[in-house]
Image: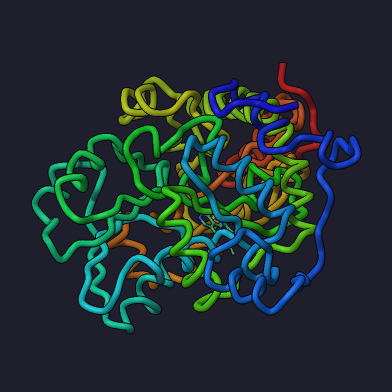
Length: 414
Ligand code: 3LM
C-alpha cells in the first residue's frame, strides 16, 4: 500500500515508505545486511561517490532497509528527511559535530540527559565550541543570551530527568531571527505526542532505544530535519566523525516497534496519569512531576504542545536520600534499571545512575535534585504498578515510624 505523508499517524507508522508489491509481496521489509554494494563499472561507482546517481555504496552511508526506516521516521516527525543511527548518542553527536565549529556557541537548557551533558561539557567544549547553559523554560532568557555567535540552541522537552518543559514555538521564533538552529530531543514524547518540527524546530533527535523500539531489545537513534541538513550529517557527522551506523537487524526491530507505537503510547500515558495521581496524594511523596497533573506548573504549556502527558514521572519522597534508595530497593515487580519506554515499569535514581556524569556541584547548578527518582511507567496493569509502589512506600515509612508492616506480594489496591 502506498500512503501519503498526510495520512494519520497510526497508518504512517505501519505503512509509510514501503510497498510490499515491490518486494515479492513481503509484508515485512527485507533486512539488508550487506556491508558493500557492487557497481557495474568504475564509471558507475565513481558517479555514486560524486552523488551523481542514487546507488548504494557501503552500509556506513546507508542501506535499502535503513532508507525505508528513515522515510518512515521522517513521515512520523513530519520532517523533510531523517537519518537513522546506531544509538541516540550517535544521532546527537553526529548532528552536533556537523553543525558547529570552534568559536561557535551552543546554548543548551539547564537540564539534559547525562551523556548529552557530558558530550557538550567534556567533548565539544574541549574542541573550542563555547557551551552556555541557560534556563530555557523562560524564552526571555534566550533573548538575552543569543548572539550572532550562537549557532545552535539545544533542549529536551520534557527534560530528562526532571520533567521541565520548554516552549518550542517561542524558542523557534527567537532562533529564527538569527543564523541559528533549534534542536530538540523528543525522546520522552515520541512523534506521537509532539512534533518539534511542526512547532518550528530545525532538528529533532531521538533515542529510538526507548519508546520507538519499545521492547528493550535494541539500541538506536535518529535525527530529522531538512534534506540538506540530513545530507550534511550523513556525509560528515555519521560517515567521518562517529561511524554510528545502525545495523540492518536493528532497523528491522525498530520498524516492528514503530507499528505499535501509538497503541503502546496511549497505554503508557493512561497508566502514568493514574500512577501520578496516586503518588500526588501519598503523604510519603513530597513532589510529583508529571505534565498531566492539574497543579503541574507548566501544565498549560503541556496542553499547548503535547497531545498527551507521556509515560515519564519524576518524584521526590518526604524523606532522606537513604529512604529514597530503600524505596527503590523495596519494589518487587518494578525493576531498578536505566533506560525508559519499555513494556516493563523501570525506576532509577538519576544522581547515582543516568546523571552520574554530573558532579555534585553540577547537579545542583543544573537543577537535578539529589533525591529525585525517575519512573518510566510501563504497560503492566496499572493496579499492579500502584500496588507495588504502595507496598514499598508503606514498608519504608512504616519502618521509619516503628510500625513493622511487612508487604506481601502485589495486592491490588482497593
Ligand atoms: C536513560 N537515556 O536511562 P541512547 N536522549 C535522551 C535519553 O534519555 C537518552 C539518549 C538521548 C538513558 C539511557 S543511561 C546509561 C541509559 C533524552 C538515553 C541517548 O544512545 O540510545 O542510549 O540514547 O535516561
